Length: 168
Image (cartoon, rainbow, N blue to C red; front, side):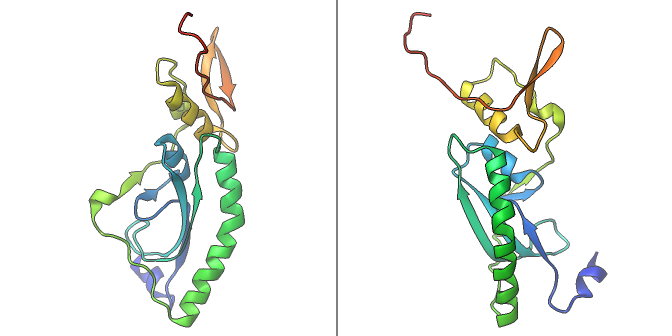
């Protein structure tokens, strides 16, 4: 609310697990993995009334590879976020201006929370898409899953393996 934000002389800052302004909203690291992005971002930004739209004081990026799981990203966030908050508070103390976000809606992806059923494996999908789904749904989440004989089977790790022969 505007009154709450205005009650702090230097504003309110927020740690956001997403590369602003591209990834705003929820589950941004999961979406970055699912979309096959080259990296995932972490930002400390000034809060405004619009979700994740305030200027950025500090940012970091983690390169994503085919072996990066959401567990790795969460570990990186836990390690980096205190450092980014420290950088942001120091910048505010020095009076350094934050980096404004690009206001063009065309550069922004609004990420919505991932629901448990979003992790269901559709075996007809491309193997690389399934691999990204497994990586984005692993610990600390409930895992990618399918059903076998009416029993839920969770898949925590996977790899894409190309056949050695064209004769199957």
